[in-house]
Amino acid sequence: MKEIVVISGKGGTGKTSLSASFAYLEGQNALVCDCDVDAANMHLLLGADFSKREDFFSGEVALIDEEVCTNCGECKDVCRFDAIHVKDGQHRVDPISCEGCWYCSRVCPTKAISMSTQKAGDLYISNIKQDAKMAHAKLGFAAENSGKLVAKVKKIGKELADELGVSYIITDGSPGIGCPVISSLSGADLVVLVTEATVSGLHDLQRVQKLVKTFNLKAVCVINKYDLNENMTKKIEDFLKEEDIELVAKLPYDETFTKALAMAKPIVEYDKNSNLSSRVIEAWEKIKGKTI
Amino acid sequence: MKIVFTAKGENWDSPMDPRFGRMDMLVVYDEKSEKLEAIANSETEEMEHGAGLQTAKKVLDLNPDVIITGNGAGQKALEILKRSNVKMYTGAGDMSIKEAYEAFKNNKLQLQF
Image (cartoon, rainbow over all chains, first blue to last red; front, side, top):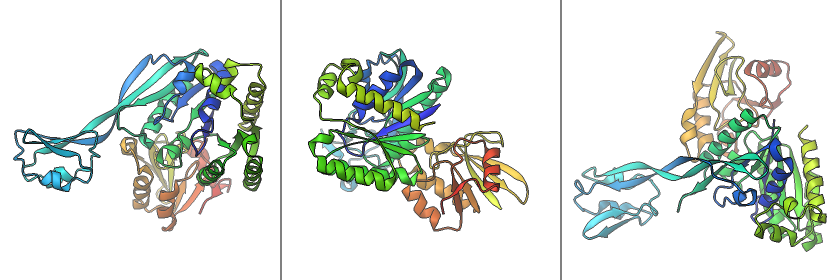
């Protein structure tokens, strides 16, 4: 079994649209993990049914025991996140602003403040439209993605993949280069870098490639919207050559992308016979070839 | 020589864990005493961030000569590890611990630093 992780560095490059298309093409033979939990939307494209759910706990939040609290206000003075307010003469913690740093709990003279783990969101296993399964998560308000959550999604995905005996795990990675991305990349057999022909597309590709190199991972690249700025595409291609990364597809700007998205379908499902779809299919074949 | 393997289980036949920071298990082999010891690393599973640094500390506390892993460590953990005398070898992510040890002996792994 091979795990293919799709990342982009920059948002809006078409990473999720492409991941969903690859997953759709591979059908039952792939297990899908959506690790882009901050803005999880792959479930929309793949028609996830959210059939299995479990709670996800992450981070802590302060809680004031009003029986013990003397309303001295020391907690409010030290809080760096402006999370403690007086309401009806009683100091209270706003759980959305609280970062769980423990400062208030440490300084409270009457030990009235305890820290409790917070439910950050839900983890799901879903059946998806191509008769396959998907591991994903949804965060609650003010909760953020983390290496921990990504590792959980991937763990569930890996167990399912073993059980189902699929050939591929297709992981929609998180954007950026931080902790969740590192966690997305861990254990990957191949990384697909999706970029676009813009200044920030190249810049973020360079940043994320640095990370990929740290982990000695093999990578290929897709340049989306290459015809928006062919000079920039040339620069990206030069960079790929320097880094010895194979360019598996150059996709033109195409409204099929957004039309498919609006219909909640992967590109290759929305218009199988379009020029765009055939390029995506070709890219996926090349990507698979690189995992051997 | 003392060797730390990033692993998913506790004996020679257990698979390696390609991850460093969030590895399931640290398996330590002391060539002198020929003893294999496993140390759970499950607390990193509950850490939102900073798993790499935490694990690096744990590994360095054991004072090993060599770390054998799959993909290698992240930037922050690397900075710490490089400042000690430990050597890191990568490319053993798909092997069992035994295979990883053999590969190391036969110079088949990549030396990171």
